[in-house]
Length: 200
Image 1: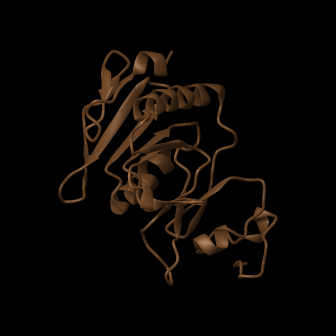
Image 2: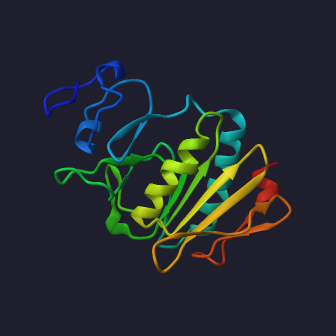
């Protein structure tokens, strides 16, 4: 059943998996499972990430945090709600994601609940079972929302796929970056990520 303004949902089984939900609904959910909303559709997140995923996330966060010290941009790691302005329903956001890592340079997008709007850069680290969601569904909403740069980190292959938004608002895929190469961002040219440390 659909959540109303007065209903607190304590078990995910109370929700219709085929239902359409908004951020207002999301705020009423008090169950254990982590979920995301993509254009109103409910997506269960993978169980607690494995050790390799967490080590990669920690190292990327460290390198990003060091680079952005004293700068306007802020770095956030999951769990951190990002409400994207795509496919709104009755004035409500219907897409709420928790990227593994994101960089937000416009302080006006930040509030006590997270980020309202597109981060400048999003990093997603693939885990068993979430590859299709990251590769297809999130790619589409990140592109539509105007996320300027999107990285998909593949721990199994030790490679990072980088997508950059062009002037028409379409993602352009760059050459895959392997552990032997320095990883540079197009929007922060001075930031160089050492993938040997990331995939150590």
